[in-house]
Amino acid sequence: MKFIPILALLFISFVGFSQPTASFSLSDNVICEGDCIDIENTSSNDVVSSSWSFPSGTPSFYSGMNPGQICFNTAGTYTLSLTVTDANGATSSASQVLTVGSMPMISIGLLDTIGGVPINDTIIPMYGGMWPTGQITSGAVIVASGFVAGDSLVWVTPNGGNDVYCFGDVAGTCDTVVVAPFYSTYYILNNISPEGCIASDTVFVEVMFRDSVLVSVPDAFSPNGDGQNDVLRVVTNVDKDMNYSNGFNGDGGAIVSMNFEVYNRYGQMVFRTTNPQEGWDGTFKGKPLNIGTFAYRLEYRLINGLSGSRNGNVTLYK
Image 1: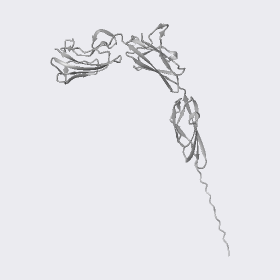
Image 2: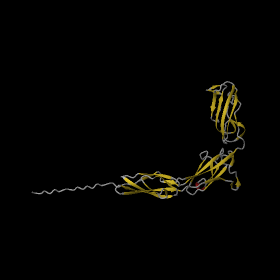
Image 3: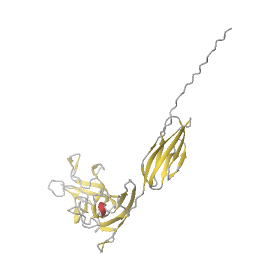
């Protein structure tokens, strides 16, 4: 009997596997002291464990897929790192640089003197003097301190920055300004660091009116086209240029906002306006009304912050 050897062939196949790839994203690469960032693990290829390092962060270390939010209270430049491991024990690492900027400092106050001459530090006359040349001739002087080279100073004012004059200007920062607001208000100064960190301070400037601001509604008008008393308007003793007049004028300059309504004897509203410069010409739906007595209701707010209301009657003549 012959034996035929049977050769068993062993086929060994080598199956390759992919290495893990570590990566992560930051919600921001530049922040300020006290700020936090969100971190997301974007690693690929069957990662089973992740180890994180956040120097000076809270927390400073983390084990797990996504650390979530990490906070930094100390300025500096830090390298954040991630090491991932897959099921086969293979590892991969990634890192990113985070800049934590210092919080700037700022303080503003009102000066008591200019060149040794005393000035009123919080109270100024209404509309102390505006400026054909664009320069304030009188007002409150606000000075800033605490900023350093590289900072940017941004004034936030009632008129979008158009009512301040740079009285002193250290290295182009506009650190000292003269202001002449129409009414008592706050001025805010933002100090912005090169990293975009912002510190703010606020000062209050009170405006005192030289005389009382008076509001009146005439008790009669005659819309006959003769150019005299043709329109019924709410009038004040301060004009639109903020100048006091001896009597009343018709432009309602001291009024910031108002609601003025006129009614006939049947209680029907025949006129309404919220514009202090607009008046009633004695018409209703485009047609002139007859002679008669009409009731009015007025609500208003003045440039000095005071509000008021009144009711009364007005007679329409021809």
